[in-house]
Length: 184
Length: 232
Image 1 (cartoon, each protein chain N blue to C red):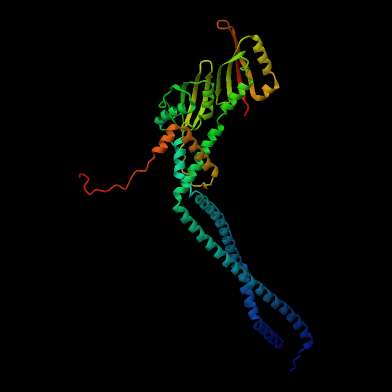
Image 2 (cartoon, rainbow over the protein chains, first blue to last red):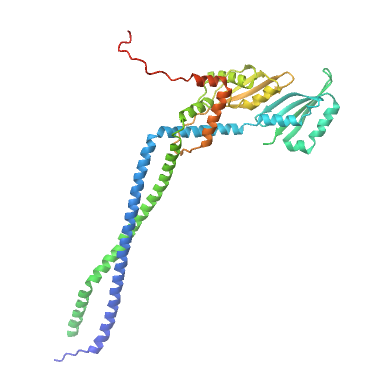
């Protein structure tokens, strides 16, 4: 009986397999090394962040304890701020009555004695009703002319004459009622 | 037959030589596909937790810093003053005192005013009043009415008749109850402290009733000698 071994033919296959296995081994080693490095990196990162979280948590506990001791003060500070803020809001919304009165006085012909202020009503809608008494038609005409001037118009949001009346009984007076709305 | 035996032996030797690589590959594959993603996920959660803690700490530090600034300020005194000027609920009897103060401060004699006991007083109590005032007093009234009576007052309407020196006005006394709020972070507001102190100074200087009350706030003596028998 004869055994035939063709070493040349076997060598060709053997080398191919060995090359493939060599590459496979290298891939497994690299894959293993990469996994190992990744594990170490993740472990270090996790350890650092855990330490950080622990220290922050203990700081939080410490601060909460401190704040609990001054809870009353905190409630008072909040109350003070809120109340003052509300108080200021109410005052800010309040019309500037004194400024409005001074603005009106600047434009009314009261300095010349040809006219007199009858009554003035200021209200929270930033408007006013003014009653002016004129000694005759000339000062009234002059004032009506002044109302038409740009300076007067620009000083008020709205200005309109609601009534002119003539009274014969007392000193022949002309009464003019003027409604104005002030600029903001 | 022999070739098969040789082939099997070769395969057996190959497996024997590479068994460590095969086990390593399986192990690393399991690690890479399940354990590492799990750890990365946990790391992400810790980072998120750390971020949230940063925000919480910033808020807590801010609260602590604000409260530290208030330690040297007599906040009770400031709150008492604010609650006097702008009370939580209306004590309608106090309106009589405020009207008297208004009269003294503005120099406008108030001849009569409506009762504070009519109507519901939720946040606002409206009083109609009549008084006597020349132009100077009228202007003083317009300047001084909001705080100097010792109460926060707004003016709803005012009518002035300079010929007869008469004024008619409608004023509003304000109150507001503020419920405690948990979500707000206190702020140190130096302006508020300055504003209230300035208000107190002005009230002490200009409002005689307020100045008198401040002087009368005396400390109750507690160092008296104690007795064992109260009937002795």
